[in-house]
Image 1 (tube, rainbow, N blue to C red):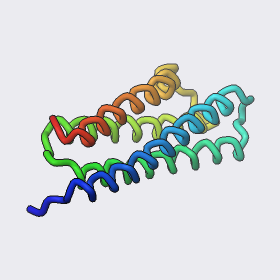
Image 2: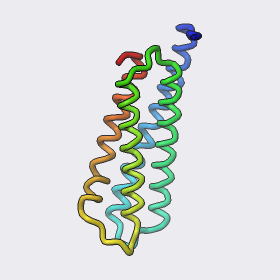
Image 3: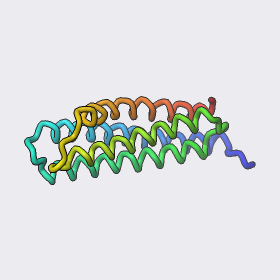
Image 4: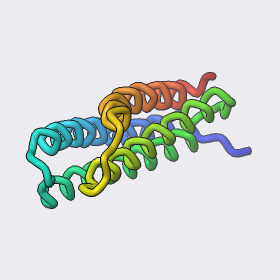
Length: 140
């Protein structure tokens, strides 16, 4: 197994930190655009929904790239790290699925779908933070 030097690790971590800042900004833009969409009248504006979805997908892709890079630079690969990353992925998939359901006009959705879509961003953000923390520290 090859190990990376401390200098290489530091350089990679600086790049990852920059990406984390960008991901955080995109996450906030996703939340803001989601609030705007939720306060717009039905049927939702296709433009607003599209912008919200594109920002959200970009955020998910960037977070996936960050976690992949962190995984490659992490010293230890423990079950706790894997579990937290899986939970994070499930939360993002939940957000995408409930968001897709919310844009359907012909469906009468239970209130729980809206509540899940409102709570999941906070849980996803917390789970993402824990994932990044564990991978940056290389500890389980």
